[in-house]
Image 1: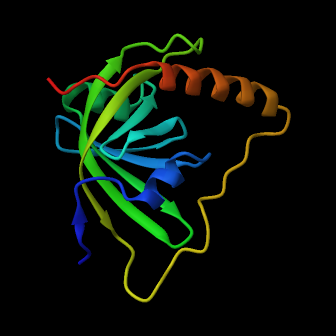
Image 2: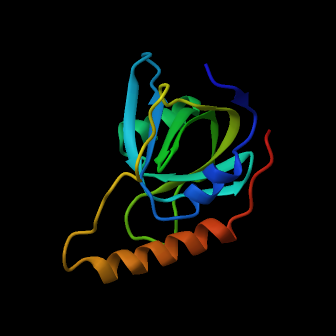
Length: 156
């Protein structure tokens, strides 16, 4: 078992500052997990990760209900599980025309979770569909500007 940290290590912060897919697992009121892929994720600091998720997905419903979330970060020579509790920052993001909610995940525990004598050789590969590159560039620019401009809310 690997050492459990109380904040994001430098490698995880750098990973989250690059275009990547992040896996988020949430827990429903019925005890069932929902798994979502997110791309609008940003480390506000070593103890807070900002997430943008559709409020209409199972994960969006679960975050709203209880805030319980686990992120899985995968990249070259890196596999981290990040556990925490998310709190709603914005019910509706203004930078896009479709429903997205913004949450701050308070990092409670981080552990490496790769099995012994193995390593990942790269990030989770993904690509934008042909012809959508400019639209995605505009959406990413608008959303990240909103993420950066929105202050972190102190824990209640």
